[in-house]
Length: 307
Image 1 (tube, helix red, strand yellow):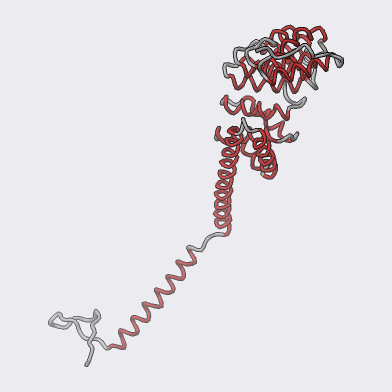
Image 2 (image 1 turned 180 degrees about the vertical axis):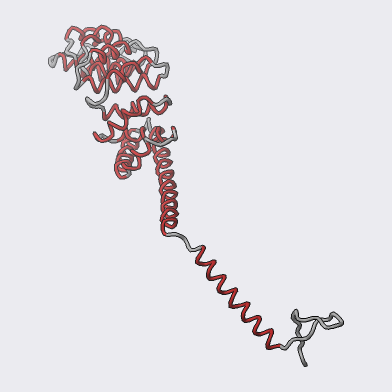
């Protein structure tokens, strides 16, 4: 069987295609294939990536991977801190989790500190809160830089972290006004920071702010102020600490007694003694400890809990 193929050629008189030899077709196809392969090679050369482009793409890939890992890290921190707060009534488990969080934050310190510069308020807040679980001078500078953040939640967690890390690099003039903030979290945490600073830095501004916080409407703020007054040896707080012995909150009554003992107020013993029959175990124990500090020879035989 003969296969006849046709190519464009001279037209005969009847304007029909003229048969062409098969070998001519092979030659034409060969030339076509050679030209096509050469063209494809040129195109491949054209699309070969520039080394700089390749490097940029690799940097983008690594940046994306790093961002993904940071997201996982921050979400893990957030979940673990939520669990820690839920253990508030189980101090043993809470202490265990605190130890784990401290190790985790230290192991990922570079990422946590970089998170403080994040554009996300959530990430800044998480990273600031996580620094509460460690005590490291390296964190003070980055935390102080966030005191001007517009998000109260971020500032509140910054103050919480500074309550364990504050040193003389923390400007008292920036912390004291926060004790008058409309946000209770800012008030209670700023008082803690001032209490820490008052134990090492002499500042009338800090002392005045702590004394004013003793009459705050929020119990947690008063509680922190009572503790800060004792830790900072703020003698001007003594009259209000005596009043705090009758506070509705047992924890405040207890720490008021301990703070008066820290101030060496021996004349407060008679006012502390009624707490020996307080219905709160915490208040009774604190009163006994405070009286023994003020008078090691004190007797408790006549003090019994009334029905």
